[in-house]
Image (tube, rainbow, N blue to C red):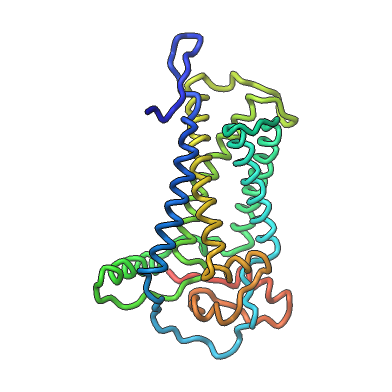
Length: 288
């Protein structure tokens, strides 16, 4: 079983032209299997969360803890809409739904690319850039959780910073798949007629184009599984407070104190909307 589709160039060279489309179903099945395994683990084997003692501040934590600014939320939902549009326009024709998908696909790709560029600037200069990256405490806690799961006598892990390690690792996976799909997609636009720049199918050689299509396809099927997992966790009862924060911009004080360490995710006292916005932006620090 070949994982790639091949063709013969005019010069007799065998070149890859895309991934084999059955990999789309592999990604879907992998996502469904993850749902089953994780739900079974949580239902029958998971232990109650235990955290190391944290001295919570007695005052200064607002009832509604700001988590995501309006700008960050708009970026998230625009990116989500463009990514769903890309996946639907890419894979629906492969299951028999025929429509002029190429135009819709590259337009959604332009929206995704623009949103990613905006997010890089926004996160680098207006948010705490390092809040989404794993630190030493995250890695140490992950090791402790593994040992405790194996029955070893280890102290409980710390409460989370703004983002748990799982969110940070998922963010890294999305970066890898999203950037791969975006960069290859921008070059692939030179092979179709768009309103942005002239068509130039001779920009690269046959082998380079073929490998670009392969990487684009692999990123696409990877995003299928990643988005399935993202939606699954967003709908789980224990994660709904986080999901709601991406809609309303805040989470409850009780959830914040239960799951997050005020020393690792510092919240400024919010007495006005402007202060709340700052707390949702730079008023967040990760120890590490």
